[in-house]
Image (cartoon, rainbow, N blue to C red; front, side, top):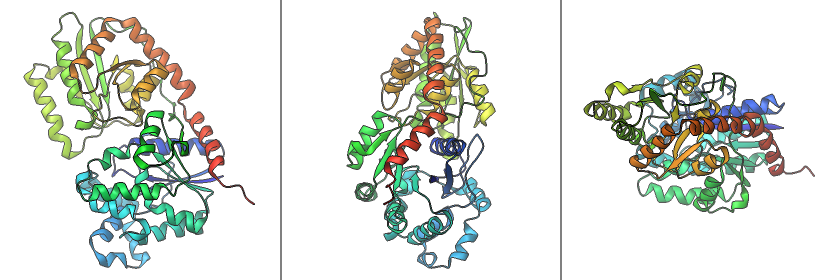
Length: 434
């Protein structure tokens, strides 16, 4: 089976959807399938072996130029190729890329319009590449924002286009009018044309069935799987330490992920003299636009006299990430929004670290399935602190949560199982030859 995964690059940062797509493609290849991972917009960045091809569809520079200058909607394709150089795209995105929805309303609508939008030339180039050079059995979009090209792919190639649902509503809900209403309408129209979708959990499958106005029966739930190489190699703690407790956060540094709430919870714990000393270690991508947010957190911790209890380690490569996770006693990413994937929690559990997570989005069913920790009322730092305190005061329980979750992740959330389930699903949506 020949499978093409179209994965939207994230402008040079580690992105959960990119990591998921790369892990899936690599696992499919390991099982003998011809899986081709093709980046869109920019090259992808992963913390494991990158299996994507050199070809970039919808190069970000061309998409931008065609959106803003009519001339570039008619330039010859050989000229466009100059702007699709992966090296050039990496250089540009390190300096000027913006993925903030507030700035991308018009271009979002145009991209969803597909062959009717300003980037119609990019749709034509993608279809020609797929038809002439690849000839896939199925095309898999890694998020629904890429759906604008699906109609032409299905029409010209006669193969199904399927799509992973991976948190697109978070981006869409930030669009200003009139772009928001236009984008929602286009999404529903285009989604009606796809035969099937896949979500990583029941929560998001149910939510997106309503959001896209598609039948829930068309959305398969296939839990994500990790490449577990290197994870879990360290000695798993059988109990929490008595002198100090290290709480960790691993996610993008932004208000939506809730680091400020975790800092406030640490302040509450630090004031409780019945507990061991608490330290907070954070790691993850920091956009320059979010640097004031991080500085504000640091300043507040300094005011509270806790500056020496906080450490930000920046963006970590794979060995650094695993070592970071294995240094933790407890883990928390208290998202403000309803999380659709929860990959960071799986990574913590893969290393035996118990988690405290908000009781919304995918987290309740993940915690129920793994037994990996406690839930708290979302948006309430006091509730977060109470759950962390409960873990701290019951170290044997916390350690058992971590050990149990690690076992479940290895049994149910590994890349091989994910890929095998995905293959079965592809076979259901690919039409049988007559």
